[in-house]
Amino acid sequence: MEGEMQTESKIRADSGTEPGPRVPGCSLRHFACEQNLLSRPDGSASFLQGDTSVLAGVYGPAEVKISKEIFNKATLEVILRPKTGLPGVAEKSRERLIRNTCEAVVLGALHPRTSITVVLQVVSDAGSLLACCLNAACMALVDAGVPMRALFCGVTCALDSDGTLMLDPTAKQEKEARAVLTFALDSVERKLLMSTTKGLYSDTELQQCLAAAQTASTHVFRFYRESLQRRYSKS
Amino acid sequence: MAAGFKTVEPLEYYRRFLKENCRPDGRELGEFRTTTVNEFGAPPTDAPDKGYVVPNVDLSPLCSSRFRSGPPGEEAQVASQFIADVIENSQIIQKEDLCISSGKLAWVLYCDLICLNHDGNILDACTFALLAALKNVQLPEVTINEETALAEVNLKKKSYLNIRTHPVATSFAVFDDTLLIVDPTEEEEHLATGTLTVVMDEEGRLCCLHKPGGSGLTGAKLQDCMSRAVTRHKEVKKLMDEVFKSMKPK
Image 1: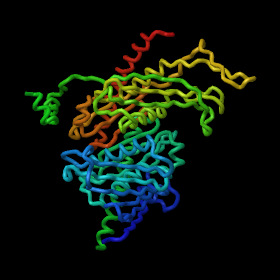
Image 2: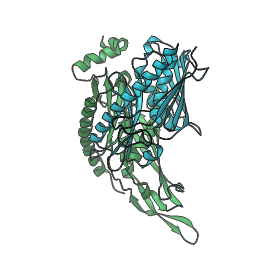
Image 3: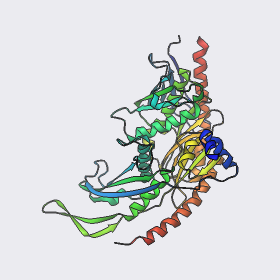
Image 4: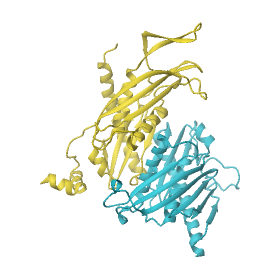
């Protein structure tokens, strides 16, 4: 039985500057992941991006209510709990986004008439929350051993008033930005699985952000691979 | 014969049609009816110059047997959030226009979008209905009486809202990771492997790219969607202008 496996990684893209304050351009914040930290859920993971932290737990494949049963695939459910207050309409919207992303990736056909529940708890929010939730959900699904056809990751891009692109913005940068775009990309071909945006931007800017997000996702997937390799190489 | 085939293998039935590049039942949009109600409220403390716009999408059993009466279900909440995002992102009205007296009194616009008939693609219909309703809103003039510190509403003098941009939503359904259909009906949405909604204003700027999961799309396919959204915007704008011209001024 593996204990907790903590992996940390400081990812820098092309610029090659020394670690410390981030260079706006193509760098992601320091991220860390911890798996199998909760004893009751089948799989759990905690994902940290800078100061944003999300805890995810996965129960499944498990018993499903007859009213929610689907005859040929698993019923996926996502519950997102904000840090403070009761869940509202914004949480429902995010739950739908995360659920549809997971449904595209999870091989539900292998577990018909079952339910797979992903519970996400926001521990701290310092920008790029939805991307962090997606990453935590993916790691938790892997920890639970749910069959998936690909991994997915979330990347956030912010565009400020003069068109400069910032990846993985902090809360302050998100507030000051003209537009904030969040993408979920799959690991096989870096296709766009989910996108949600805030603010006004042009068509070309969208393509630029998507390209930057695809490059950044390579780093995230490399991190996933390293952390899982480290975890399973011990046992 | 065809009806039996359709029930047993709905996806195959659609695939046969898609191969011939046509759709079996023509396009139908879900109808929408919008009402906006004006009310007074105090502006939020962190933005003393702004008023409120509160959208609410109501999907009742009237529009489709899928929905039950009671508190709004997930689909209604997601649609309401989408409309709120569109209003905020596209800046269709300046919230400052809704302020009557800074820090004390502002207009609260309640936009209730009631679906009468649901046949897929509610997000497009909602955005259009909202735009039409906001164009129709007339706010009476309000003066604050300095002696009594009460607001006096002059119902005889009304003015229209200043609509700055005209966002138009275009929805697509993705089939089998390759085919894209514009303006899907309910059956098509149900069978599709993914959906995508693009909200564009008249200058070609994107207000919202809403892709709630589903099968993956490459950058090239996305570009294709953008160009179709631009053409759709032009068609819808023409239709809108005709409708507004025909509305009787009060």
